[in-house]
Image (tube, rainbow, N blue to C red; front, side):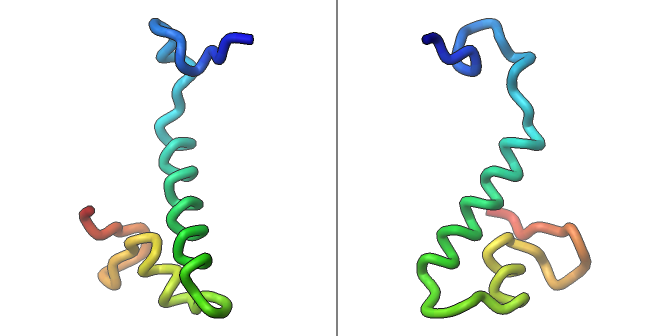
Length: 61
């Protein structure tokens, strides 16, 4: 079976917002796996790169 997401010329199957959300979940999974216990809200914000300047702002990098 061919994976249509990787076929040339099928850019319509890519969703940048979904890819970004998957990256964020990956960041959380990594942070949780490195933690000895549940993550605090501050640790979650740090893992997601949320700047203290306001909601939805991400640190570069």
